[in-house]
Image (cartoon, rainbow, N blue to C red; front, side, top):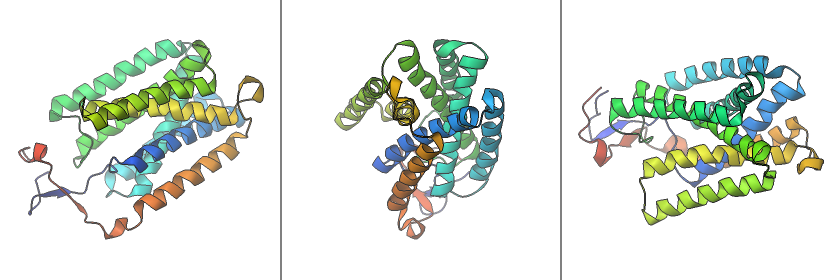
Length: 267
């Protein structure tokens, strides 16, 4: 895809990485946790059927996401779909295949590293903004799916294997996110590396918050029905999305060419 006249690229297919992005990412992971558990546990469909439903929905949503122009609601629907499918993938690997959260985490880590390695080999960069080519976007969503599945497994590992409470698990992952944020603002590390670390660890942070909402009081939860917790989280996400995208339709449909990409050859 060639650079358009005037030194611009077609609009990025990924939302701008701002504070609202991270707030919505955490809310999306919480929603993915509660919605995934609602499908497999509350409805009693089990992990095989739950994985089939969520993965089929993910494929359909990603088809529209990749085939169309960027739209915030569609993009965040795809993020929610990856977190919901990620919950089912992690639980399926642990409980149906008997791999355990540690074994599942190793496999998912290998998958994430492989996806990022292929991405880097093709583009010599792992930057997620802007993403304008279809092959880049496919690799982005593959990495997102692996990272959300890995985050689920890691969060469950902290609670079910290490023995932390939901609050303690959230504090551990929040601590990692805090270190990443500090490194970003101090300019002490590569921002692309920091993005993927934060992307992985916001998943268990959101997932442990989802467990806090829905698990029984006896084990430290608030015992809210999963469908109630899902609706509350969805409402919060939509409110942040609306507030962060007001005036979006008036913005330019093109993205300025970053200096680091100015010399990239057309694809």
